Length: 357
Ligand code: SAH
Ligand code: SF4
Image 1 (tube, protein in one colour):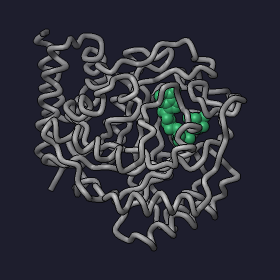
Image 2 (cartoon, protein in one colour; image 1 turned 120 degrees about the horizontal axis):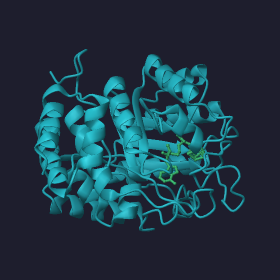
Image 3 (cartoon, helix red, strand yellow; image 1 turned 180 degrees about the vertical axis):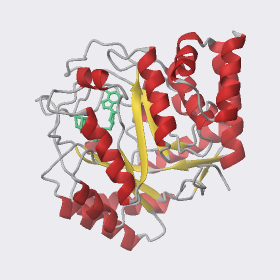
């Protein structure tokens, strides 16, 4: 293990920050021993803040229609083979009610940028969830919208919003998206979301095509500056009907290492072990947790929707009932000494400086 890299991990844990060059050196130079060291320290941090709790979010995939054409994604509008669907309000409420019975207290409504799923309808769904289950949080992940629409979602009762920044480097962004999509606009949306009052989450794919170690270092620096309450990272996984069909998947080892660095950077951050991580590695959720993650987002979508909502190939989904899936997750988490809790799993209270009080 290189001692200069151990010092960088120490520095990150102490200062909660590193120069971009420091992040880059870690990404380029880490061996399995260093990754193990970072994971142990990150796990200690998550234990200090969250104890043995694992927060669960019930993921409901509300629409597979998308007006965008992100080059990496199976839902992109150019993919004629994607089976498109849109869940009715009643279907969504049925998923929520089932999830509530199972112990979920946060619901994530995720979908493509489906303009036919109009804003009023989504506001109505949010308001209905909050009326039916006042003790629950609602997270939205429905892409880029005008600020007034974000405001309307927030006014309707939505608490949190996930919008991955995808990459902090505009030149890299341009290689992952068609010309009509803009990196500046993505970042402007994140700013709007925060100003409107949302708890926000950004994030990126690990091993996305054309990504360099420098890009990842810039992502870590960007997240350090933004200080989002949530951060979603998972490996890129190719989808057969996209321009990146033949690109390799991202690495689980690197993803876990980055989870550790993010935990050391911000001990309070809500950090999921993503479905993509579980897709590239069967025990990805456990490995993610042991590397510092503290959130899992089991799928509550109806079985037929799950099969159609394919961002990438081989999406981990047992196809089993939500209840069975949760029982399996509880067992897996218990196996590594952690406990799935019935809780909204809000971000820990933070001072202006972003540290726990
Ligand atoms: N349409 C919304 C939400 C759905 S996509 C949005 O784009 O924000 C949610 C996330 O899935 C994206 O942010 C992207 O980072 C991830 N994703 C898309 N295609 C992927 C792939 N091939 N491999 C791994 N993650 C992918
Ligand atoms: Fe649409 Fe999101 Fe996929 Fe891009 S990543 S094509 S916005 S669903």
